[in-house]
Image (cartoon, rainbow, N blue to C red; front, side, top):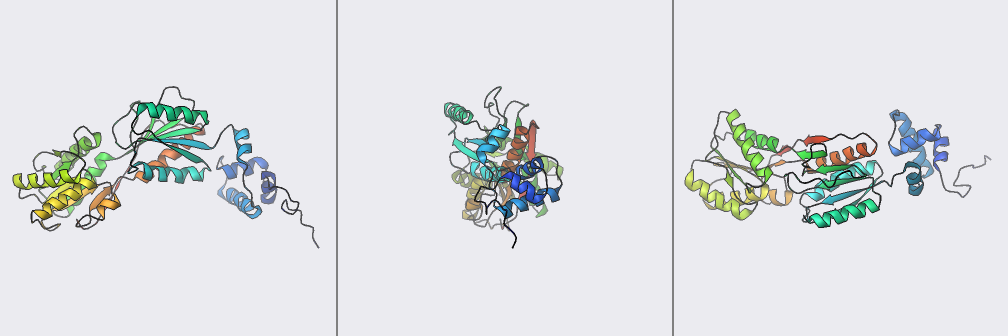
Length: 338
């Protein structure tokens, strides 16, 4: 009968040395494989992970922190109290952070600079390894601070400092996708109804709409209709549009909420959708887009991918490989019935 020499049989905690021995690698190689670090062959990583799973190895977080000088935590500071933008971004960030065996502390600044600085101080006191700042608008914002002891990545709302690391949506690309789809479906008299002119996303999408139409040899019907990000504005603007341009056959809206108001306004005026007028929105907010009548074709800005990319860039910066500048995440069209 063979004697069981496993750590479990000996009644002691499984350590990384046991994993290394089971996998037939050095202690350093086992550590790199489990932490996702170093240039190792994939088969080596797989062998080490299989050995860890077989032995029931659970890393000692305190020991890892002492050895590495890291806490394996990051802070996420959001300005989006409603969660419409921050939740998808955070969900994407957690996908990447979990792969690096890191956890996040979520802090809501509520668009209050004093509260934001309070959260920053508390996160630094907890010795987080880095911070993601997630906004709800695409307008540039002031940097979180100067000469901070940890790397910072800005998601959706970029820092005004070009040397910071920013992950942003492709606002102009979203407009091109919408216009191209409307033209592809036979629309030639296309209008644009959007949010406040004071918002960078509204201005960028409006400018890109005009450019995209010009690329097809078309001109925008009238001027861009700037207003608010509400259904009420969409309904009102649709009525105004029909009075001024009754031959309109396509509308690109600055977001899904406005688009749902536009579809309601057009339908109430007796317009058949999408036979007479096609409508495209932006955001792919399922709660709104799927409930619209008809369900809304829209551009998904890739908020989860923005979060994933922001976390990947933060982890790289923590590892000593910062990538400053603007990193643009492309959106994609989600075709429904509108």
